Amino acid sequence: MGFSTTAIHAGNEPDVATGAVSVPIYQTSTYAQESLGKHKGFEYARTQNPTRSALERNIAALENAQFGFAFASGMAAIDAVLKLVKAGDHAILGDNTYGGTYRLFAKVLSNYGVEFDLADTTKTEDLESFFKPNTKMVFVETPTNPVMSVTDLAAVSKLAHERGSKVVCDNTFMSPYFQRPIEHGVDIVVHSTTKYLNGHSDSVGGFVALNDEKDAEWIKFVQNSIGAILSPFDSFLVLRGTKTLAVRMEAHDRNGRVVANFLAEHPKVQKVYYPGLVSHPQHELASRQQTGFGGMVSFETGSLDNAKTVLQNVKLCTLGESLGGVETLISHPASMTHASVPEETRAKLGITEGLVRISVGIEDVEDIVADLDNALG
Ligand SMILES: *Cc1c(COP(=O)(O)O)cnc(C)c1O
Image (cartoon, rainbow, N blue to C red):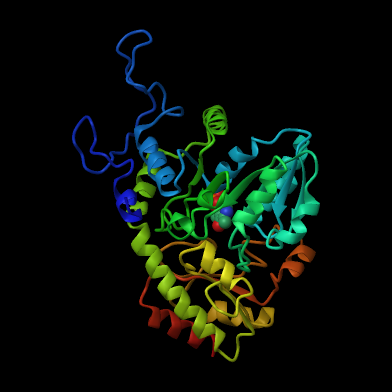
C-alpha cells in the first residue's frame, strides 16, 4: 500500500464498539473487568489505551517498523531509548543533535555510569575511531538541527553493526514521508511528534519505532514502568495529523525549496543551509537517502545585529521555538534552541550569533518570501 493510504488507514479501523470512523478519544483511567482475571485486554490506562494503541500502529506502519510506542514528548521517547544502555556502556552521539538530546546525554545520562563521546557522524570515514569495545549505541540525527548536515545512515549502520552496536536515528526533521531510517539499516527511530507528525503546533509528544522484538519488549516495559505516556487527547491529535502528513510534507518541501533559493540569491545572506541546494556539500547523499528536502532552512546573516533585524522585522513569520507546523516559524538557534550547547561547540558547528533558522510553513510561498525580503531589506 502507498504511504498516504497507510497514513489514513493504519490503526484507523472503524471503532469496534460503535463503528466511529475516527478513532475516539478514550478518556478513561481504567476499564471494567468482567470477572477476576477476565478483561478485554485493557486494565489500566498507563499500560493500555485504545487511542494511543491506534497511533502506535499508525506511526509504526509509516516507519516500516513492527513496533511503535508513543510518549509524552520527544525527550521522553529519547529517554526511553537510552534505557537500552547500562552503566559501563559507551555511546556515540552525533555532535550536532537537538540541544535537548545533548543535554540529556551530558547532564543526565552521564550521572548513571554511561560514557559517551561526541562525533561528527557526517564523516563516516572518521567514525570508526570512536568505537570502543563497550560501545552499544550510536545516536544520530539527519539532517541536523540547525545546520542541516547529513549522515549516511546505511554506512553508519554497517559500521556500528559490525562492532556490536545499535543505531538510533532521530527522524523528526524529515518525517517518515521523506526518510525511513529502518530501510537504511537503522535499528530504532525516534520522533518528536510535536513537529511534522502532528504538524499543527498544538501538541507535544514523542515516538519510538523499531523491529527488534526483545528491544521492543523493553521499551514497552519502560513506557509502562516510567509512565511518560502520550495522553488520549494528544494521541487523537497526532493521529489526525498523520492523515495529512503526505500533503503537508509536499507543501513544506515545495515552499522550502523556493525560500532556500530566494535566500541563496539575496545579497544580505552569506550562506544558506538546505540539503536541497546543489551547493550543499551533501546534496548528493541527501538526494539518495531522502525523497525530499522538507521545510527546514537556516541562513547566515553575518552578525547578531543582522539576525536581530530580520527577527524583529518579520510580520508573517512568527518568532518562536519549535518547527514542523503549518505556520512559518523563525528562530535564533544560538540563543533559543541551542542555548544549552556550550559556546565553543556551537562555534565549531557553525551555530553563530548571525544564524537564523526558518521552519517554512505551508502558507502561500510568495507571502513568506515577501516577508523575508522586507525583513532583510
Ligand atoms: C523538538 C525536538 C526534539 C524534542 O522533542 P520534544 O517533543 O520537544 O520533547 C528532539 N529532536 C528533535 C530533532 C527536535 O526537533
